[in-house]
Image 1 (tube, helix red, strand yellow):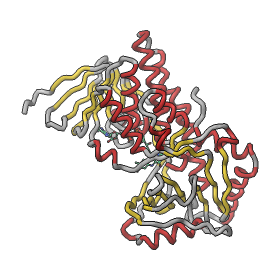
Image 2 (cartoon, rainbow, N blue to C red):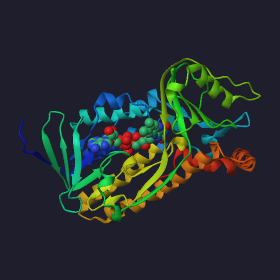
Image 3 (cartoon, rainbow, N blue to C red):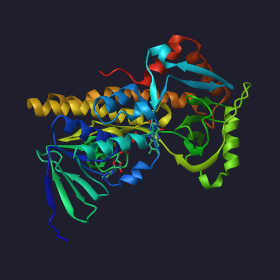
Image 4 (spheres, rainbow, N blue to C red):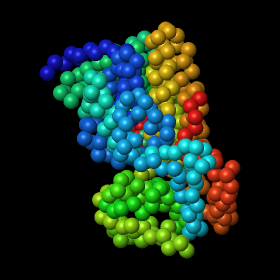
Length: 398
Ligand SMILES: Cc1cc2nc3c(=O)[nH]c(=O)nc-3n(C[C@H](O)[C@H](O)[C@H](O)COP(=O)(O)OP(=O)(O)OC[C@H]3O[C@@H](n4cnc5c(N)ncnc54)[C@H](O)[C@@H]3O)c2cc1C
């Protein structure tokens, strides 16, 4: 095997073949701009990893209007509201009535399948299963990605613009010298215990439940598979939980005078999902730009992670297209500030939903009752509910 790296040249080099990287590559190709994506995992591993499930209407439009696929409209499920459940009672937040919008239940796996198929259909260059990825020369006119391909061959991608779309554990963000970035973050003293279940849906829409025993989320995948979560300790060991104990814990949090009962079934996946809120500022270092989880992460309570990744891509794509069509860096220079406006709104919403719905182990009776007062204020009136409805379904694009 040759030790001399193969040199590849392109306009935009993208690290990461998740939703952000593949969507950006797709939009660039449509605009006649070349890109190469490098992804460390294989197609099957990404396809079978369960993550986000709720798409804002703007994310759905990006998939459909840009010609990725319209399967989201045929196999996804439109949700026009959610239930907020507290004190054992459910209160529907009617998105369509409040803000005239909705969200779609369409698992991230399907988004990935659509994006990967679109890249293959359109002849996009994606290197799967790469190793040893590194980025260098970000502050020069030829930022470079180095990696070893699945065939064992060392390669270098020389590009004009390098995009770090490599998620929260990628290499791009950490390549920015510490004195050139600010890491804003907050940790939470809890995590989510997530299960996948073979069962019919317990409800038509998502139920976000606050109870004295902790938070629970009853979500769906399709007619036969459901996704449910309950608040747990970040160091919870899934193997210590029997299926019977999991169902008892979930049901306890949902119990109420209305007699709501979960539809149980075979649990075939158990995971503990740890999370924190994080924003890297700025989302740029020289000619390298960060998009999606590479630049920021949110707790999953507001269902914003995947949607924010797409929102970044929309802003970054416009900036790159403007650069190639006019030669001006004006929009690239403001990418970080413009993307951060939505990111901080989503950070606030995700933080708010998380702190309103979860129970802290050390919460006083004052804190617990204050939380119930906050929830009552949200469901009591249209103005109380409207902020939640607008934020959950997605703010209009700036
Ligand atoms: C377990 C889990 C559950 C989640 N659940 C929800 C949810 O319910 N709702 C919600 O809204 N959000 C959820 N999220 C967040 C959501 O999945 C992310 O916000 C979304 O995937 C962001 O897309 P992305 O493309 O920016 O990053 P990613 O999807 O993380 O994609 C980044 C890609 O880069 C690749 N990569 C990393 N390092 C390298 C490297 N060195 N070289 C090459 N490639 C590399 C990774 O393999 C990955 O495929 C969840 C996340 C996790 C981890």
